[in-house]
Length: 154
View 1 (tube, rainbow, N blue to C red):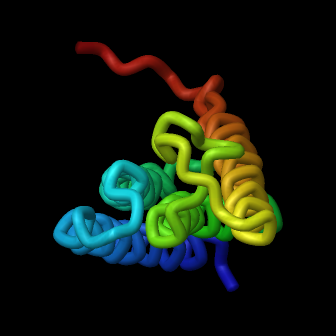
View 2: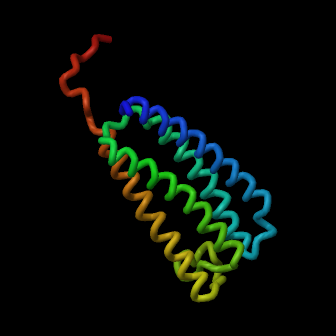
């Protein structure tokens, strides 16, 4: 399949998933007070909204990336995983009243079972790595590519 077609498809999907995550973040905001730890619920609401906007922006920037097929596919999946895991991990922590081991300010001292804390730690650590890798790959993909283009007169 042509790289341009793949870029267009990934771009459209990132924008669509971004709006979905933005909506999930808004819906999470409606239920913040019902969660076992409302402060962590607020974090989940904000993560959903901000990560959704991140995906929309990434989708708009996507056609400008200069990445090979493997790097493009990896960046796409890392971005989706990182954005959705960011929202979901904090939502699970809010529902369980857990997360003190890794997110003490948002957890407000709420500590879950060792298994819950392990799940939250895995989610938060893996999403952080995914988002860092996504950011590096996007920056690499936005490297200058028009060194040989003639400057246009104003």
